[in-house]
Length: 109
Image (cartoon, rainbow, N blue to C red; front, side):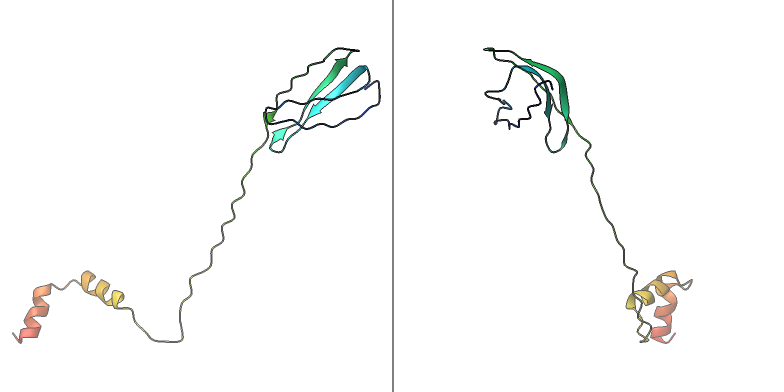
């Protein structure tokens, strides 16, 4: 802040970071990572011959998922006169006639 110095650093696998050889003064420290909201400490004091510690905790950012669903209309073949055997079975099942009437007609009674 007061020094006008900008520096970048990356954390190690444990989340630790270090800035070496920076000027004495107050700094604004910002941490950011993909999938998290950025966190800023407004006034981190760096003093001569002292190790300064500034711990930051990142919060999980907004998570969004996009799902795209598309539907195609069923096609009906209007060029042929084919009849589905399932349609006939449905007719027999829903027919008010009894099966005994069909047997009687087959046997000639």
